[in-house]
Image 1: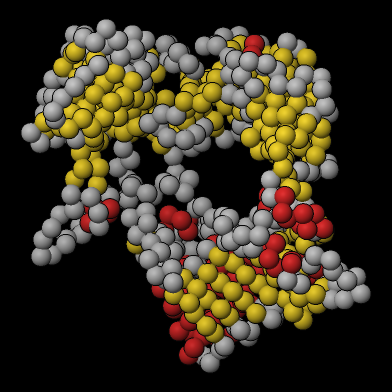
Image 2: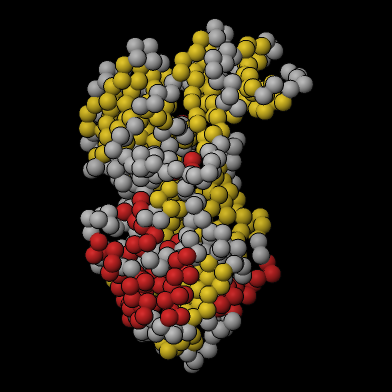
Length: 593
């Protein structure tokens, strides 16, 4: 197709209907681009000052004869005797590492016509077809590039007509934007409802569809919606609605839809489904906490997996027949690959971890209690393997927000999992393990964890086989912060383990996060911590949830650990708590790895 003595950096499909490839070459220290058609004709890209943009990727232009080149220049970190940080700096990453300067150019290889899509007043340029593009306006009130990363605030979305160079304001966007395959309509999630925007006549109107519904385009003006126990379709021109499927109880999710990501970032994308090919549905039944899986095609529904509490992954249809496969497991059930063909019963074709049959003897119990916000939540208690009903056993309590999703996974005896917590080893060694859920209240993350765990312990002590004098608490990362705070307020635990955790939320609020190369305050105002206010707006809320203020109250031995090179959660949080406990002569050991 092509040969060169120069460095060939990138070869990518053009994405155009005519096919072909776009290649990126480095020649004499400068970048060159060209398009090679399927009949091997070469079309050179005129660089126009872009030759120092050494990296290249291809973005869909939604047009037959154009391709969008996303060009990136690596800007090295400035070197000098003094590193100067100005109060007006928007992206602090430039002070600690090389940064990426990116622009997009739409290019017609056959005419060499080029359109620069990047404008310093906008970002996120996304082609939707017919010379139209979606862009966000740069928020001039935003202080740091990461300020909105935890979901606070909104983005001002505009439609740009590249032919007329006219910008039209669409909406303030906080959540989802779903784009029709041909770009004719946008569906925008707004508080309490969905709104439709017509990119042709530039008109917008509210739909009579709740924000809890999920849309998938069937065609340019017809949308399939899932909402609770219902699947229906809507004609966007007439707003006529037709029910497709309902269940008596439960929540329906569509599994086999197509999603094309955009420069607007998730969850703002092209989303569509081919109803004629059939719908894969997952139904969650809230009444008994089970799930079932079904196949809907030609107006008929077939149940593929009946109601189960097992954990199901990789559920999919085989390409050329209406046959299905999936992986099924539970805490006491070895993972199995299963296949269902037509009307036959499902068959197991492979069983994993067959050397761990002993885990089939695991015993789990559900405990229910009130969370900090008054919501009923649950915790799962796993008893020691082969436990004696006449004896009491020590308990390891592990916390990290909601953990119910962990309780139907097979208990693999390994630390190689998202929690770094080996449940199988503990229950095989004579410990019970308790995984309580935590719900958040407006009192703040520390107090929410304390109140939820106290209510969970009230239920735990009703279990006869639990030794409430030998209960330990363990947490990592956000769970480590929750452990730290509970340790300052509770006398119900015999020991604590906290890893990679924050101990001083006020210090960390204004700290620089070396993983995200940005201030940490955005993670406190939103996200997991979700204080909802800045430190200046509500200092008392931060103070009463701040571990280090009460470190002198910890009354049980504490093991602390931190990664010395952890750029996300600074080891100084653990070191500070260690120093406080050492000062007040508390039993403490800290591990710095």
